Image (cartoon, rainbow, N blue to C red; front, side):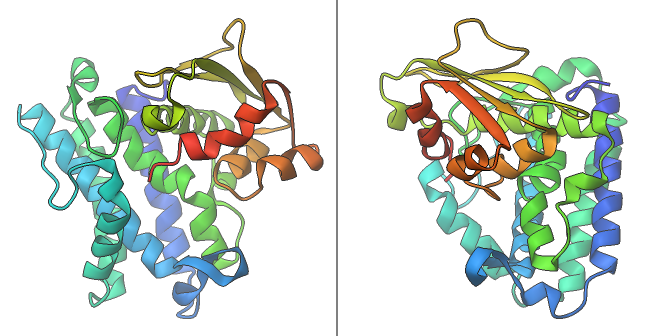
Length: 285
């Protein structure tokens, strides 16, 4: 299965929903108020799930609008610099709702996306729409992939931190983990800031050894970023991770770039200063 074909998307959405259903059922009342970043910082677990619910609904709404040939305006979100304020407003809008409802809404969106895939043909996955989160048009396939990868990888360590458990990607079969990482790199590319990169022209190869690993590359140019599988020739920087878990921990900021190098989770060669700039160049907000 491919990361962006109908079967792969449906299979992984079902699995992400199953894992989160079990995760929610195992939580104690105290878990929901625990902070999800080190030193008792960041959103609480409750706030993080509220964020996942809001973004999932927007992705699904954008899919439906695109297939209907319509735009999908998002109130209060006209450009990507509005994202932090929009995120906070959406979280606060869910503050006074019973939290079981918010969890149920998030799971229901995953189910709706899965059901939606049953009615699609492969050709519609390449249809594109403009989305204020990102630097280039996003495809229907990428939007649906975001419903799996945003909760299931981007925030998979954050929600686990709030519950004091291992990152949720430890539950994936190797093939699914590889698909989720592929989706992650697509969203990394979409999140590139050309205005921060300026006249930068560079290509970074990322390689992860072992089950679930693989090779990917991301480009940076004044007009945006692209992503591909495999290794690009003449890369500006190459980063090798000892396994897929190390890659996921680095890209979800569970370990710093320097920390990954010092603990031998990763090795890098080429333009090393560029590696330390990547979090700033690709930060969604």
